[in-house]
Length: 191
Image (cartoon, rainbow, N blue to C red; front, top):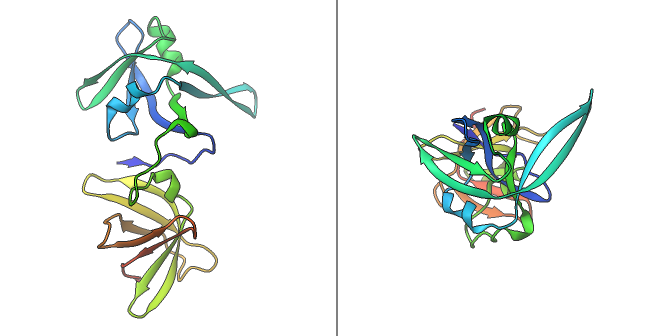
């Protein structure tokens, strides 16, 4: 099960470096893309990593990076990056993210949404003739069968429970309005 990334105002994370592979600087990636070929389409990829220069002080460092080679390995992917010549250099990259400035990422097609755009939206549920607030999207989960909205309660929501709402367009998710910051779902409220 894969959780959605935390939204960031200026870049989109395309992959996480989760481990190393071999001794020649290869890294294991967890892709956050449906189409791995997208990684080859960006010339302005950056390596983002959080560093802790001193106790309690966390900084974000960014380094331009190029993926020399990307290939499938088992159920995942491995890659060789231009910044890692050997295993030691690759090990130093574990925990980093590969991203692209948001301005360079293609806009979503009408009716399609990036997960990051859904985080924070209010989720309203139709219950008979009434519409009640379930809460706000905390994150999304990829479960295999379908994606799931994890909705956390707010002060004005119908209850204090966390709700899991399947992302099934036109059946469960009936409307997404990014401008108004809301999602309308045809789901049940278990009170």
